[in-house]
Image 1 (cartoon, one colour):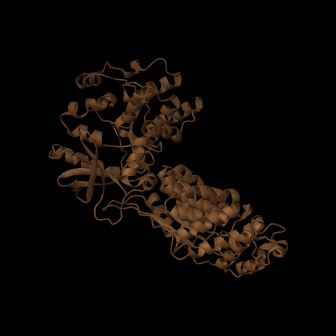
Image 2 (cartoon, one colour):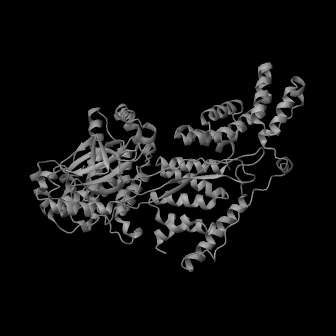
Image 3 (tube, helix red, strand yellow):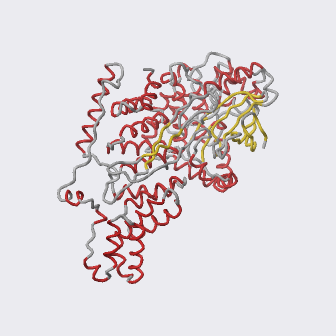
Length: 636
């Protein structure tokens, strides 16, 4: 390992004509095992003032690029006289390596997969091109160097674009363009080579070339660097002439418009090209998604990537994809049962390396306490939910007309518990849940100890009750099915008491409880909590899904699923879970709306993000975090 400013460089993972890429981590952060990728310029380039100035100017823009299809930059600066960028460490391969592995194995990328990759890259470009709409002081960012080496595919099949602005900046600052940009030239738009003013159309051109190569599996333009420079500089050269005629008509039309020599004849923005790509995908019924690319990655690089994860000693945390400066405060603290309420501990994904401020996602994870017979979360009726949504919508409109809501003018939406269906009111009033309905007369005749166990259970002496039930079971195994529900309830009650101090033992008790009674909602839910706390997200998801099967209105389970999908960067799934929570309208509706808004910000859905932040403030005017980010997003 080599110290480099505030970072510890662990291993060189890439090198090019411009610089080196190192796997690294932050120095002096106790217990931090998350990794970064540090890109630093070669020493000989670090002595050229023009290059340094352009590099730093470009780097300062990159911190605004927060999108699921863009490799995130956290920090930039100069260490030991060398400019650098600190960004996400991506466990995966670039598109050039991906394509080479396909050729080596005699495989080819299908049209659907090629189209999916082009769409994902186009989403990244569209976000960058329209960034000034959401960041008033920012300009549209142009990549100007989209090529296979800058398109990364993660182990999970996600597509991410990297090196925004860097190629363009260095192309402008370096005299030896031919030597440095040998691999970039086949993808550069003619106006870049000619030194003419450029706009988003240059990225459209690059993507057109890339998409053509994805479809055909072969380079579109080949030749020596000097030949390529001459060709790109010529007014007579037309790349449309080399588009293969065996491609589908729709694909040919998209490529022809994307690669037109005259930028005025191209798509003016990546967003326009994205519309046609998605239209083409619908036309052919394309179903390729992230999972398809994940299967390719597993086939081509599975063993290599797993080995990389094992060597790092962070297989599970790497998959979670939590960035080095993001800090998760795990759920915990006091979880004593609270009558009629839900105990909450907030897990916050924060941000901040140095003076750089990036998006904060506040995610809340629930650790409810429970007394026998209490529902963990009050469930609003369908009518109440609709009223809550209508109230929020109406007040949002009023707030907009008044140029934003104020604490004094907006009332908090009141949410009530779901009324008990006919026939259930009596049992709920007595504190009896479905799994507690137990008629012991026949069992008591078989074994009098059952009455003692039930009495201990009623008195919340869970450990004593469980011990007696175990004795009953050892004396007469045939009673297992009959005493399973109350026995499981006793185990769950005892496990909840100790899960703070002894989670390992608590997990064993919960597992035994759900083995006895697979329909134990609380047993499955608390197992999900423990697995999530241990970052065993696969098992946590399995348990939470089981909870939602048993009780589709259990908002807490959807909420925690949203948390897991967010920290593992499955933003679309996180959005779906939080939307489900909002539909159920639990008492913490404002927190669900806030989390939904933050996830939508990550997805580039700015309008939806702002709308849900407004609703969060209307539902709870004291939600300062929502107010803060609403002001940040709207400027008022």
